[in-house]
Amino acid sequence: MIFLDTVFLMYDMCRYDKSWHLHEKSAWCAAFSKEELLVLEYYDDLKSFYESGYGNPLNLKLGCTTIKDLLERFS
Image (cartoon, rainbow, N blue to C red; front, side):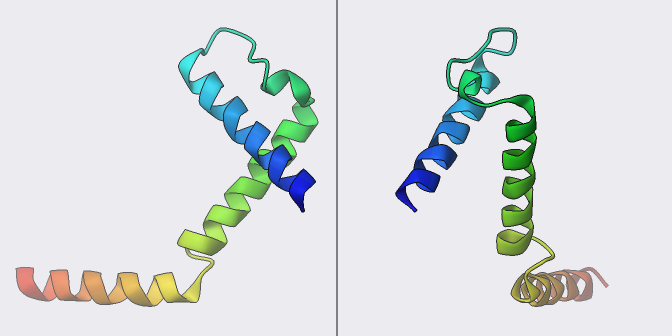
């Protein structure tokens, strides 16, 4: 598990560095191939979907109540 944590940390550093230096090659990103970066990006998207998006049933319930209350107040 420690190895995976290190890989994800390196990927986060790659993304952070790339956001600041758009036209330069990041040393953190050089550790990954294009295919590996795509896999890590896809993993991050899935993780976000299930933790804080529509993939978590709790988020659906929380959001519906808030929107319902908002619409009732405006009506």
